[in-house]
Amino acid sequence: MSRVIEVLGKSLALAGFLFTALTYAYNLHVDRQHERYKQATILVEQYSKSGVLGFENELVQRSLYYNAGGLNLNNEENYPDEMFELVAKETLFGYDGRAQGGETKIKPFLSKLMDIMDFYSRVGFCLDAEICDDRILRRFFCPRAKAFGERHSRLIAYYNDYGSSKAWSDGLDSFNRVCVGENG
Image (cartoon, rainbow, N blue to C red):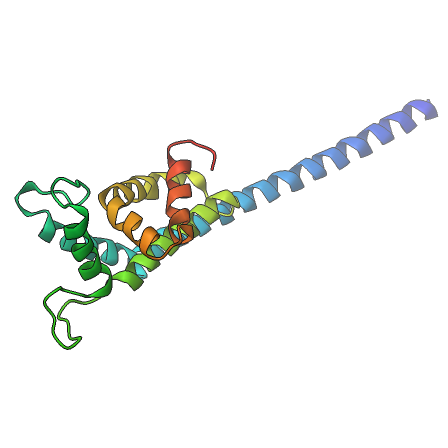
């Protein structure tokens, strides 16, 4: 009889230990999921508040100016390299091709473009490092990043060549690969 009580006691102790361990693991999982959700929503909020959304809209407005009449900046037939280079310099550096004495009336956009690219790098890092909830980030940012990359692909490529470095746009590229399900 004492042997039965001893086995029963050990079984209850083991069951209690397993229950406590499983409860602890579950709570850690829930806490981690909550933190990932929180980090993702912070990025979504920062997208608007940090100015990235406004910068993207400003670049779209600038592009629309050149796309008048159905022309497309990404199409080399509409904008041959020499003509596109003037548009790119005007957009990125504020050079308007008509300025005399170094004055320009066009505000340079390069630092804003770099802020946009940096932001998408941070979103990609948050996904890669599993710091953020991937469903939220994919749903919110993938369509935006894809549209941004496609809409401004030639301008991005121009600066990659001009700056002799693709590293600054790698974050957007890798994030877009994640969005379409590629390993990056």
